Length: 121
Image (tube, helix red, strand yellow):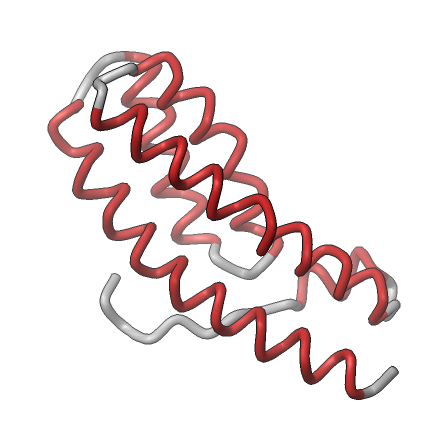
């Protein structure tokens, strides 16, 4: 996961039908909500609250697809499944940390994409 992540807004552009303002709104929502979800997820994992871990992972999963992070979405689905099934719990902290680190790159990429989109309006 340490490789450079490139934000891919193809899916978001497709559902937006080319509406740059809509894409900017979705980027804003992602940047406002996702860091809080990750903080909540990290706390749940630290407390070994597996029900909350599964619930928050489920909430984060679709947002990752919006930004072209399909591999992260799959990994988040794994965290959700493991937490809900209470299996492979030892893998959850490492998987979370890998996703969280890549999300730092996503946040920066989205900020850049937002600036570029806004300049075209």
